Length: 182
Image: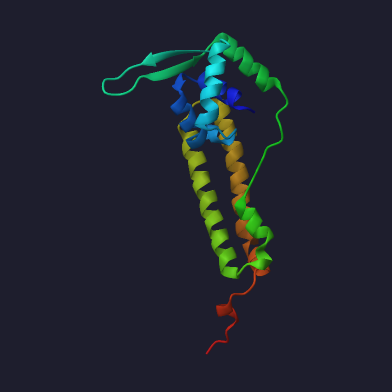
């Protein structure tokens, strides 16, 4: 998926400014689809507007700069459907935690423990975010993807908890653990 498609998808659910699109693409359920920056969103919005896929209007509030608010057109919806009809690319998953796990035998056990504890905390926060987000929507497609995401993260958490000792055992004992007890 590209930035154009993400912008069209977000605008399909309602009008928004470029800033709002950026916030939604990083702080809401849209964050799972593609990384988006202001430097990629605004050029995409401009091009989509020139192509007739979007329209815009300015909203003014006293004491604030004018906001450019975008709306999707029928042509934009057709392009969105066209992009959604393409076979999706392979999902990309990147994790610094997995690099630590792969190199666990080079690290002290305490370092690995802290990484595991941190990853567990991240997964628990992600699960809460997904649950809270799905509770706030009536849209069935959004509920479905929340359920899918929840199941993926829940299984990651379960695997990590059940197998943390095996990963910890790969790590080196720290100098404190090697000292004889007095």
